[in-house]
Each structure stands twice: as C-alpha cells, then as structure tokens.
Length: 246
Length: 253
Image (cartoon, rainbow over all chains, first blue to last red; front, top):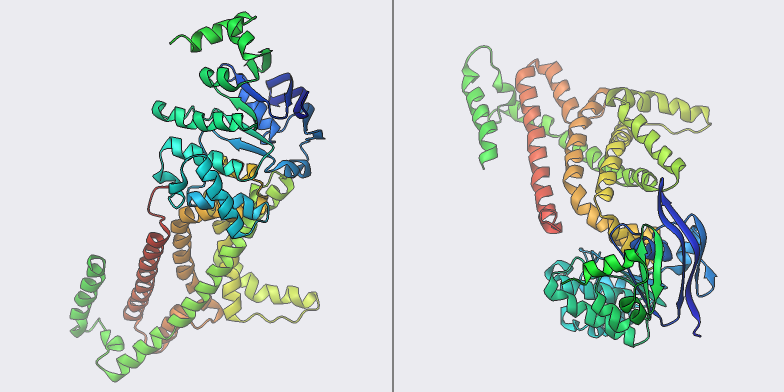
C-alpha cells in the first residue's frame, strides 16, 4: 500500500443553504490517479477546490500527506504550491509572457533566482511540448497551447499533487487530445492526480480509481474496469449512457 | 487642431470687439507693455496650480490604494474602515474641507502640543489629496474587482501571498483599466485647485482675482483665466492618451 497522499473524511460544504458536499470521503494514495465525473452541479469541482483550499469546508477532515488542512490562513498558506491546479479557463496571467507566467511562482514563492527559475520554466515548457512559445503572450496562443502552459506553470512549483478541474471543457475539440496527451505522460511518470473530467477515454487509460458524484454525494467508486462494465446504481448507469452515447 | 478651433475663433471674435466702449481687451493686449505685463502676471500662477495639483494627485493615488485594499479584505472590520472613510470623505464639499484644514487643523495640532503651521500651499494640497482619495479608492476598487477571480485563484495555487498576488498579478492588470478614470480625477484636481485662491494661495485664479481688483476688467481677465485652464487640461489629456497607448490600456486584454 503506497503512502496516503490525500485523505478526505466526511467532508461537508454548504454554499449558504445549499448543501454542496455531503459526507465526502476519499482516499488517494501517492502516485494514484483519480478521475471524478458526474453531472454538472454535482459538486465535483467543489471537491478539488476544497483540497487546495480555494473553498472552505465546514466540517470533516482533509489531510495532505498526513498534514491536516484547516481553513486557517496559515494552514492555507502552508500548502500553496504543494497542490497544483489546472483550471477549466486556464487562468494564465494575460499581462505576462509565457515564460514569466511560469517563473513567477518559483521566484516569488520559492525564492529561486531568475536564472534557476528560467531554466526550470524552459524545462517544463519542453515537457508540455511548446518550448518555442516561451516569449509569446498568452493570448497569442491557441486554447490547447494555453492549457499546456497552465499545466507547465503548475509543474514549475514541483507540486506533490496535481488537480485538474475540467481541463479540456473550454477547448475546441481538435485541441483536446494535445492536452490529454500531456496529462497521460504526467500520469505515466507517477504524478498524483485528481482529474475532474468527462473524457472517459482518458479515464479508462490512466485512472486507478473512478468516482461518480451526483447531488453532492459520492454515489459510486471503483476501478475503471468495474465502473464502466458494471455500474451499480441507476444514476451512474444513466449518466454513463448519456455521455458514452456517441 | 480641430479642438483648438472653437476657443480660437471665440477669442478672435471677442478681440474684434475691442474698439467698442464696453470691451476692454487692452488689459490683456500683448502688443502693449501694460497688457503684456498683465498677461505675464496672470500666467505666473500656472506653476503653483500645476505644483499643488501634481503633489495632491500623487498623494491621492497612494492614499487611495491604502484605503482601497482593506475594502477587498475578507475581514468585515477592515471593510468597514474602508466604507466609513469613503462615505465620510466624499460627502464633504471641498470648500468647507479647505476651511477646516486651513483654519481648524492647526488648532487641533496646537491642542496636541504640536506646532505645525499650515500654509496655503500645504493646506490646499492636504485638502485636495484627502478629498480626492475617496474617489481614487473607489476607482481602485472597481479596477481590482474587474480582474477575474480566476486570476487570484491561479496566483494562490502557485504559492503567492496576498501582497504578491496584488503586486504581480492584480494591480498590473487593474492599472491599465483604471488609468482613464484616474486621469479624469487628475483633471478634476486641477480644476478644484482654484479653490485654493480663497485661502491666499498664489495660483491662477488668485492672480486673476487680484488683477480684476486693480484693473476692474472681470470679463476679459476671467476669459483668459478660463482659457488657461483649458490649455492645461488639453495638455493633460494629450499626455494621458500617450500614456494609455504606451501601457496598452486601449487594447482589449
């Protein structure tokens, strides 16, 4: 059994009166790849946003490598950069060049020198296969390239865990595979990943664990083989039939 | 050139009336020694007007940011401080505030055992900067809020602190958007600096008032005064457009 990377125990979250997460428990081993899917509004994005403390949780326990995360600002500060995040809308910094987008975190948060940060930035740009775009501005790149820059930006912090919040949902169809290819490579290299996505081909290929959520609950959980072959609940069967129809 | 046409035409028209008994353009006729002396006297207030406006605007830009940032905090007490400051300061008309600062503030200082005299120069600057800072703070607020939340979230996930996020991510983007309204505020300061004449500050308006008292030609002298402000504001506008182009405020991000 590998070391536990992330542990959620009975996590609850409300937005006002809306019960967004209901007793969420999840165990992610170091190096595991977990894919979370479910209909929109099911709370899957909220789960990953609680893990990197972009959202507060109201009850339950979240641990990162045994270290409990509370809503205390100091606790929040302690994980910054340890948990990388790739957003649906990329969220690159539009006023900075690609290279500076990548160097900002290592220089300001990790205290790396400019030359060390640049070396690291170029290394990860090569990893996501766009070494020649370093000096461009984000808006000069295609959506697929922007998302790969965003992945490289997260990698520059050398995080222990990488979270993906619907990384391909805002992309044109022809650009989805270039992003997924990079993600598959990361998975093969042993990165611990939690991926919220509807890309079931990707899920079959890399997931160790599938999680299906609906209405703030984890409805079904299992290995991809079992999950796709024999979904147990009616809700999950219906969801899978809807997204795998075409 | 087009924008200079109207005032120029107006001036020529008025100058053409110089012969009749009701007009007295001779007071500012540059071809006569007396008129030229008067013009030089009027324009000599320009330096003070520019100086107090620039210093007041500089203070207001810094003070406005200091006031605006607590307004973005998740702490409600900090937000309250911001709201109280903005609502209180912007409700005070400039002239009463000027009187309070110039005549009242030294008394407050004396009662605290401090001997800080306030001359017309600093009285005007303090008042203009204070009064303007409430508006500058609101401009910062709208600029900061216009930056998408995803930007601060992305900054947070790469480990930046709040201060670093503001400095490297939010403010550089916000500044392009707030430059036009900030420039507008600067023009407002330049115009409001005319109030400083009532506490004896030797600036454009004060010079005009003093000349009117000796020459008794209000129409001609105040016309020139208005044109002086017009030229000043047009120069500022041109400067701001240059700055906007340079910083890329005019392009969509």
